[in-house]
Length: 256
Image (cartoon, rainbow, N blue to C red; front, side, top):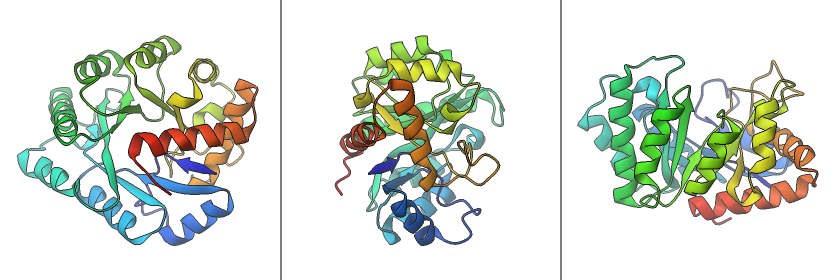
């Protein structure tokens, strides 16, 4: 069995409904999905999915793309959602210097505020990092050992950065790009990350893995990520599934 550690099940592209998406996922051997928020509204939707649909768990948080203009009111709403049933952490949060949809100083302010929130409440975080490696690492260093777990979602950094993250005790989540033909650096990351520090995810509806490129991504397709990791590591898909599922359960306190 597998767990998809990061999928935006609240996205409008899942027109058939979350129940139907999860039914298809279960047929593919996916027993649970973590649905992250990216702003207050999506965080509320993630909480509702966790409440209403078996096997769905929620993260609540404000994405760097949505950091502009965020103040204490919105952060307070995110904090209030942490007590809802099925919420297992804060995410997705972090920095994005590729699109720069929010000013970098505001991204940093909101990122640090939510890291502090995670520290205060003792919950794990899922981190978004795109082309902001240095600043992301600076923030993470400040919180290593002060937050139960730090997960780098849809990892896109270098093998060298991955090695440093592992030394810091962080976890690394691998998504669909590992199946792409040009994913040489990511393949090297997979080789060096121990299975007990690794998760698998879709980041659906985005980044659909081979052989479904061009389609909407969904939790059922996380198996292709696990299969590619198994191929890279020279082990069975069952070993990857068992280890990554155990890691997600341990990090997020999920009991199935």
